[in-house]
Length: 128
Image (cartoon, rainbow, N blue to C red):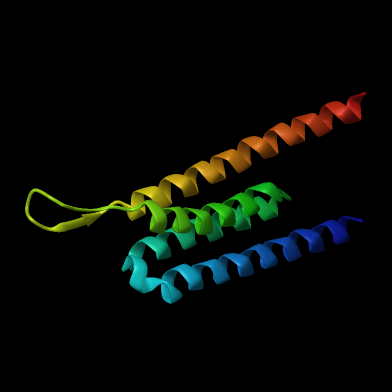
């Protein structure tokens, strides 16, 4: 039984990493002309991969899904609601990275809280 659980964790982590890779490729390369960001998608993808690996190691299935949802959903929201501006020095600015990062972080936090809540609910149900 323990081997089956171990294999399940590995398979879940690999499948979630694959979905992250697809999301990364879509946002970073396919839609590059929309955002023009080079480092931000890379940074979020690295953080996402670390979160997915750690969460999968501990058998959490909610946080990896929330991470992928936050990555791709944040990108979509950023492309819809971003605005261009000019900084005091005359350079161009855009708030897409703030929208993307905020949704990404909130999504992971929500997944973590939801996972803890479900874990406590399941523990309480088993005690009864």
